[in-house]
Length: 113
Length: 108
Image (cartoon, rainbow over all chains, first blue to last red; front, side, top):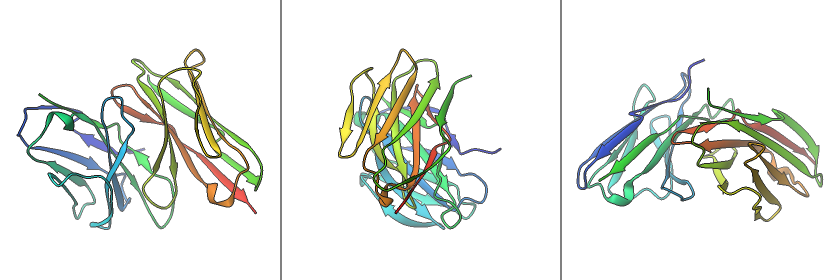
């Protein structure tokens, strides 16, 4: 069965560069959630989208933006990268009306140098 | 192949009961184990465990990691209907690998 796909799996960027992370939900899923987990830190919810509209917002920095496209995949855009942005970014998808279960991707590990 | 297995897959209890959810893993380069609660919204982070034998507690929820047994348990005491959810276990080994979840239903 298809799972949540994140790309790239690993990314190395320099300070002040930009990065774009992608999340492809399970087919038919209409909701995407983004999380950030820094080294040794608890995961933080960043933002979620339902039917291409932002549905919930967590601790997403102003330098970051995200959107969900017509095919339901989502992209997290990160600008002016800082060393502290180095983290594992993972996303989850769900089909809100039919199930409470979310399925997670394996994450993108971003390293800012 | 890395894997994370949760049990049971589904559990139905009555309010006031105590439940224990299990998570076992086989992964390389283990970093930490995480528990989440999933309702009809963004999954909520509960605990992150990195050291064996140290219990983490939050209200009626507690969790402990056993690195020797490659497993963790999540305990919920005096369950309430609001505890009904899917509880997800994840292992961070440079990727984030999730179990299939345990669907807990607490009946009044």
